[in-house]
Every structure is written in structure tokens, then in C-alpha cells.
Length: 68
Image (tube, rainbow, N blue to C red):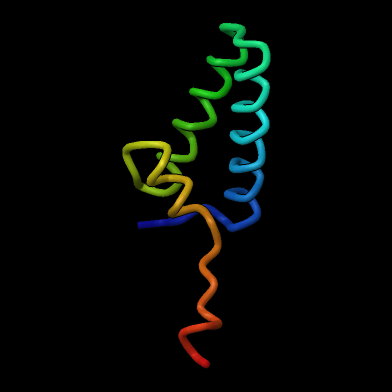
């Protein structure tokens, strides 16, 4: 499976987290729709089916402890 470039994934995570905060504060339908759109894009980009799995898959893995 192809994965999106890490910079693209980082941008999507940043957008999703900002929209989640904005939705918690404002709760408008427009913000919710945009948040759903970004969540869908994250899921498609990571090959997952829910936003929690997508966020985990999209975050960079730190393997430094495994090689020590």
C-alpha cells in the first residue's frame, strides 16, 4: 500500500487537531464537516477505517529505543 509523504500526514494531523479544538469551542456544523473531511483523508492516506487508528498510523515512529 502506498503511504502519503510524512509532511502531508503531519499537515493533516495538525489540521485535524486544530479543527477538533475549534469544534469543542464553537461546535458549528461547518467546522464539524471540515473535521470529518480531514479525518476521512487521514483514514484513506493511512489505509485505516477510523480516526484513532489513522492518527496512530500517521504519527512518525521513534525507533531510537529499539536500536539502543
